[in-house]
Image 1 (cartoon, rainbow, N blue to C red):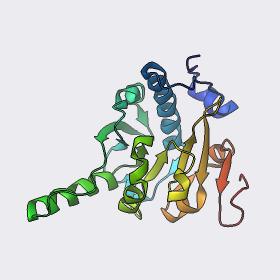
Image 2 (image 1 turned 60 degrees about the vertical axis):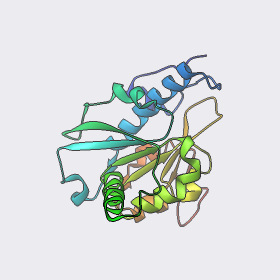
Image 3 (image 1 turned 120 degrees about the horizontal axis):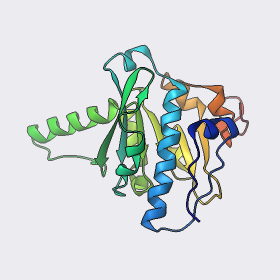
Image 4 (image 1 turned 180 degrees about the vertical axis):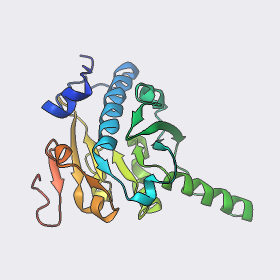
Length: 206
């Protein structure tokens, strides 16, 4: 079964009801990422960033970290207008934990981390599982909406994760970390989440 791609209005009016095949074939993986791209586009529409974060340029940036080389699946949302800005996609490849330890290498590493921090959304593919902690620590405190695609992503203080192995596109939200980053996700999105983690009740949807 291939992914069924419905309109964005359908996605956020009737909830995440997109079925997709559960195998590892490249075409299906591509279509799965197309649907996730549509969700990320809507996450941007329904999220508020600190003024200092969005005033820096006339664009919103989705950075993609991982080995999957499926960033082209995001072409459907590339350059689309969102909140009076243009959406750009940056394919960042595999996460680099470090660079050569000479002065030039240290400067290059600092510039690399700054590139991650400037993203508004950072989509972290499941191939980066071993680097979750390092990635999220690197962007902590910089208003980056981190989005993963494994069941344990929120355990590493990620903000949103798509749950694998389900018949529908399902996501969960770590509202506690979201607030710590100065972000505000609309209740319209939170109502669609399977679970919302908060200070008061980690198992209760808000």
